[in-house]
Image (tube, rainbow, N blue to C red):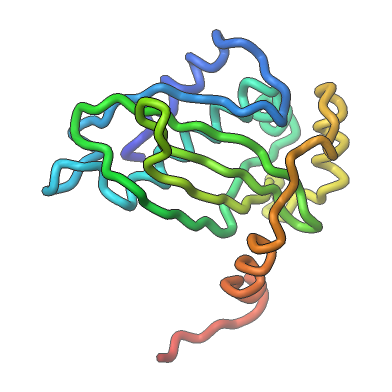
Length: 185
């Protein structure tokens, strides 16, 4: 909830911005606020994932997938994400969250997101996500492809997912939520 006001503001602004293709990168301009930074006065490492949410909402809304998903009762959920830091974004500094869809695999959709300051990449993340139906079941890629086609987008048009991301996902994946995973060290 700490980003609820920014999320609402992002969705309201995205509706006034130009429409984009599912495969077109988007950029959300922001400034590092007091609520973003830690005691070192730079954006806290955990805050970047919340800021990435804003970029995903903007892209989904501007390509029409957000409205279509809501109409069908689907909500986006993150399955896995990784992040790498290059430089710190300081309190008050302007930056953007740049987002692009990479593509779909047999179970998930993949995005690349970046924090950019003055044309320089400061942070990069990869997000693996799904859409979930109201009943909690994962939405199949066939259903997503149908929705994407209904919006006039080609579900096969993305830049593609690098093989190393598939390998990373296999290496870090937890078992299905239907499989018990007792906590032991």
